[in-house]
Image 1: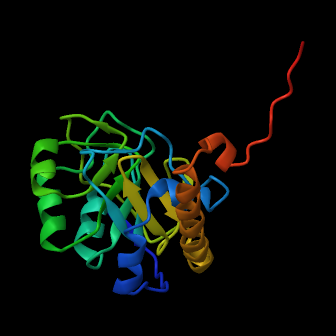
Image 2: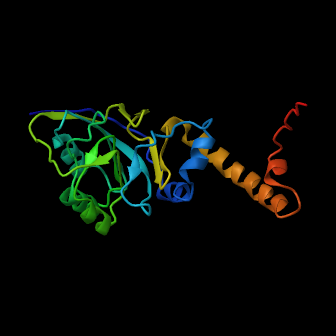
Image 3: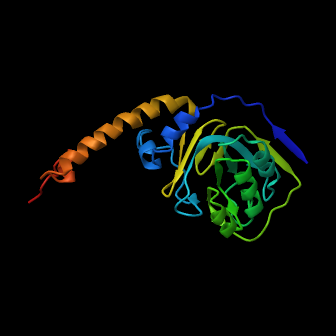
Length: 220
């Protein structure tokens, strides 16, 4: 078995900053990045109440082998989110109830994986945030290793160690760490615009008018 663990140092966001980000929904964050940086629609929470807000610790798993995910689960820091590239394989579960319990005990921020998980009732009952592509009872192997703390591909996006991961019932949005300050400022400013729209919308104008959408061309 061979693990390739890369040295990765990234700027850690303060608890106060993460608390502020936790109030931002995934749609708003995506809108401020030119309506991008949202993972594919098939990466969804096990339960609609689950939310994620934390910095990524990335892993690339070898096909049907979850040993590197166990390693990451035991080495990520409290609040960090394990983001796993599993090749979109939904025929083998790469994470289960006992691993979720470990995540709870170590106060991790959750799991995002472009693959399958199992023991979902246990994970939901525990309240451990899991966003995945599928569910299957079939278990994985633990023999071949994998990579940790390298840029990976998950849900159609590149995810780097330290990137901000936001998850809610809509799915997952990834804020690259190098964009974090800019996007946070944009989200904060846009909230003021939304509040202004709501005050106008309370009057006689329609939302169509409030958003200043161009008038259509009428054809005889």
